[in-house]
Length: 116
Image (cartoon, rainbow, N blue to C red):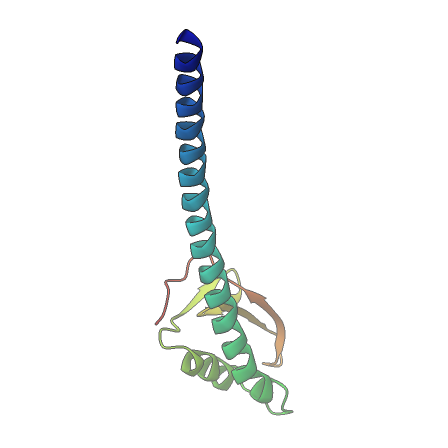
């Protein structure tokens, strides 16, 4: 009788522990999926912007205002701001040379709200 009580208690504790592990694992999977979706969205918007500015930036007579306008038009909420000599539009940071041509493009994700 005592042996069966110990076995049932041990199995019950093991069942509770495994259920807790499954619960924590499913929460972790959900959080990971949310971060993955956000990263995919960030990359999609940056790619849209980049594909919109490449034809303009690669032309011989590229103008910074035309490049910035194309980057703004590619996303619904592409606000423009300047940070340390870099013009940030949406998800892209654009740096222009003295001749007005794009010399550097980098991705800026951390301070951008999600656009629908």
